[in-house]
Each structure stands twice: as structure tokens, then as C-alpha cells.
Length: 346
Image 1 (cartoon, helix red, strand yellow):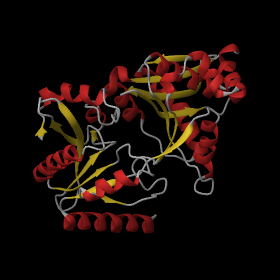
Image 2 (image 1 turned 180 degrees about the vertical axis):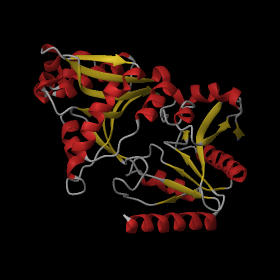
Image 3 (image 1 turned 90 degrees about the vertical axis):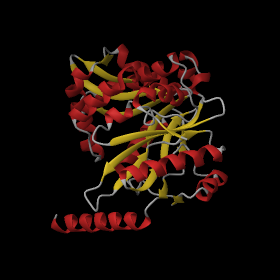
């Protein structure tokens, strides 16, 4: 086990970028996106000195009792069957917790909800686990809509895979004069216009323009802002990240006007082309709500995503390794009390 120094971070990032279980939220540039958090990088090396497992840990001091929250988004990154490596990384996380008075480590790796054997292995390693958490009760959505084995498709077979109706919609906007452009962060206000429009229809919280600009600037060439324009007016936009063989459509939105031009379908077509050009294994349309009663507005987003002939992939959810159980209880109790008081005041 080793806690890396900043000059070693490129080695770690290369490892995560090339790993089947890698995620851009475990890449080192994610620490720049989450610049209000501190961070540490823990790795485990094999006998030759090569990294065989790693974890970017975000650390945030809580305004209560001096404790810190520790979170490894979509981490740790390792071959999930290798429990020796997991134990190394836990040892590293313990060392980090001693430095920052961390009360627990929260993580949400790419472990499927039906992988009982692996879930049990994490529990035996000391992690707590609550199954079947609902949408909004975890930091990252457990249900994602994806096109898997995406690298087996081409531009031609992609359209046939979609089916005739969706393929028609994906090509329609361009025929009618809609342009889909890759833009710089200087166009973030155009994106905010369509993003907020969708948020109003579907009742989700929006990130600030400042946050999204920093998101794009921090991730550099791994992230792109796509905007669809018609007569100079933005109709749809998306922010996607291409990293570790997975293209993730992280943020998106569409205007209330000219919906007949199907700009959202053209947007997906252009982002999918980027995934095809770079050999991505997975096109990840991110979180969904599959129960209409749970959230009718966001269920409509799921209906849209289903038209692309992918599949629902359900992850196990969050694992929590407690380092200071009493500290964890103190912080969580205080946060619950504060939340209740705010609700009552409201």
C-alpha cells in the first residue's frame, strides 16, 4: 500500500484510465472539479511495483466535532475478485482517516445489484451495505441506462440497432437545419438556458454555471459541451465525459421551443459518434427512474432513453467502511436534526 505524492498522480491516472472498472470520477482531474474537497490517492502495487489497485478519496471536513467525510466516487478501482488488493486499499484509507479524522469511507464501485458473491466479499472485508436504496437516497443513481458492447457497433449498425423510428429522429434535425456543435466553456450560458428549461419541466436541481464551467475546464479533452442550434437559438445541449472506455452523458437539457425538430436525438447521435470514434465499450446515459410512481417527471426521461434500445443496469449502491463508529453516529445524528429543523422552519 502507498499513499501517493502529487508527482506520482500521472501514473495513477494512467492506471484508472486503462482499467475496465475505471471512472472519470476516480481520475485525478476529478479532484479539480471537487476543489472544495481535499483529496488523497491510495494505491496497491504488485511485486513488480506496478499499480494493481487505486482509489481517489475526497475528504470534506464536517462543521461538526472536527470529523471528516471520506468518499471514493465509483471507487476503488481494482479487479473486484482480488480481495488482497481491496484490503491494501482499506489500509490506505485507514491511514488517510487518521490524518483527517475521517469517520467512515463511502464508496460506490461498479458492482451489480445481483452480484451477491461480491457484495458479501465487501461485507466480509468490513463494509456496511444497505441494499435496494431508492433514487435520491444515494449520491449516485443505482439505475443507469446504457448501451453496452458499444465498441461492437459502427455508424451504420448503430442506426439499425436503434430501430427505424429512432434512427429517423436522429437524422431529422440535421435535415431541417439544426446544427450540433462542440463548444467551449465560453458557451456555458447557452447550455444553462436549455438545462434550466429541462429542470423546470422535470423538477431536478441544477448545477451552477460556475460549477459546470469548472467541470469542463478541469476535465479538459475528456469532456465536451455539445449544443444544438437552430437559427442561432440553442435547442438542446449535453455535457459528456469520455474516459476509461466509457462515455457518460452527465448533464443535459432541451428547450421548450421547436421540439418538433428533434434536437435531443441529434445531440445523442453526435455524442454517440464521439464514443464510436474513440472505441468506447459503454455509452452511459446515466441515472434513471424506472418507477413512474416514484417520480413521474423523471420517469419521462427514462421513456426517452428507452428509445435508444439500451438496457437498465442496476448497481448495488453504496458501501460504508466505518473508522470511528461513534463519530459517524454523532455527525449523522446532528445532520438529521439540522435537516429536520430546516424543514420545520420552511
